[in-house]
Length: 190
Image 1 (cartoon, helix red, strand yellow):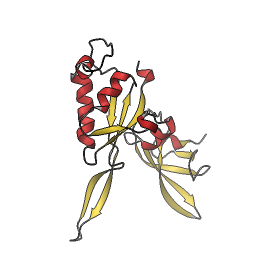
Image 2 (image 1 turned 180 degrees about the horizontal axis):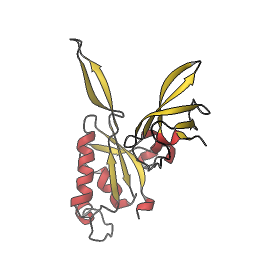
Image 3 (image 1 turned 90 degrees about the vertical axis):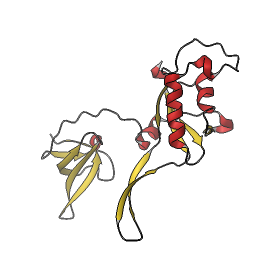
Image 4 (image 1 turned 120 degrees about the vertical axis):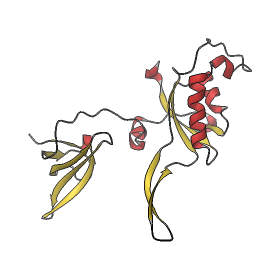
């Protein structure tokens, strides 16, 4: 059933993103579907929704704010205020369960018909971590195979597998320039 699961965008009241995300996961873990949809005449099995609602994400980014007194503070900011992204199998029961969470105003799509995100959109949002096998290490020469520097050759200076990032020093215009890439954007030079 997990193969059918897709990422959907849920619209929420501004400031309720984390509460809605927590409520969706709690509904999937603790409530039985029959408890959630007892007022609707939809025949369901008496089971939990963990096999239908798999993941919930509130995309955030770390930014450095400079305060009035000149101090810098790193804060986490929501990338899409008012939206929560849910990986789920879309059924009448799961739609109803998510749609009726307090603070949720509906799914994103025409006429409130949920439209799943494409694989490209999911990749750009960075909400789903894909395993990347890396066949190079710090100090190796790599060929950049994707992005604006495609075709350049550089040396791996630093790697962060958890964050899917690699820092490569590339020689451009006679100067050594550090460039940060995704792990899959570089491959070892033969």
